[in-house]
Length: 496
Image 1: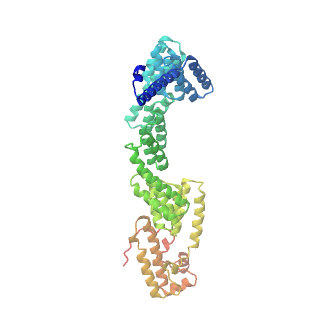
Image 2 (image 1 turned 90 degrees about the horizontal axis):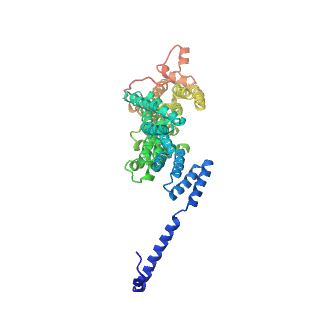
Image 3 (image 1 turned 45 degrees about the horizontal axis):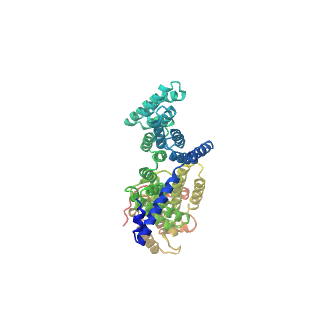
């Protein structure tokens, strides 16, 4: 409250200045308040502009002017009705309901507003509320064709929703999905319908469809933190770490310390970074860096299957590129056990070529073609494997043992023992064991040929004494002929 002039005169200079400032401030606030009250001309102008933007289909601009008009006169039911129809056109159901309800408070007999509110309820799957509104309208306007048509659809839709719940309770998820899909044609803004269908898609392992419905749920509920979190978790479950990270960041925009989003973000950021590093290193053929990043993903994520699949898939490729073929085959198997993929089969085939297991490589390329009949890589790979197989038909026993062609028997036996100890199958597991068995068989064959003077002489003259065709011509067969080019059979070695 301002001081009387007589009291102001009794104040000191500093106090007078302060009191004067208070008076001026109060006066300014009073003037601003007076200017803030719009006159009818301003309101009419906003309504006209809103109408023009609405005619041009510029709904957001129209809504801005209707907002201004409502602020100018909050009790004008026609203005509220117009804004409600724009909200309805924009799919902002909650705000549309609020405006139509306020209109009916101001003018209960305004049937157009009640019909529109009933329509919003119907599109939102709120059939009981829609039935109430439509019934009131039909009492006032029994020949309203539009409301009659919508009214007739409510009871069957409500019954169908009960059928959905029956199918869900009995585990009949596919039929439940089909019924909800039909309901969503009538009620596209129903959060319960979309949430239920999303849950059912998860039960039938269709995560992509579930995510699509969850996005709609989140939009209808005005971007909830819970919605962003659920979408991020689903994306992560199907191995889409970068998209999951984007989604969880949206959650943190609303609540930086969210109890679910924040800890998940910390883990997700580590995994996504390593996956990105691995992919980049793979493209740049920096295979050791790729391997380090891929192994880090497996360390950070010990459980989520599809994230681990992405890591195994990358490691299958990069171990092959780094010529660590045994480890590559192990990683390829891990990936293929999770999901069959043409590119992984091709990477596996390349690793098999690296171990000179050409028949298996051809079979792996063929498996890729079964998944992708247009895979040029697989078609070319088959031809490459066949060509290399033909070139490798004559094994170089000196090369296998790593000795010179002039090596004596003592040097050959020493090299054999060293190689046999290194590649003994009992020292390996899984896919690496297959590679070791193949190597061990070749080592044993090399020792047999190079320590036998006659067989060594034949080999030095350009004929492989263990070649199947040569032995057929010579009337004999060596003990390794039946598995020379394919995968070795399963057996256990006991080497001393």
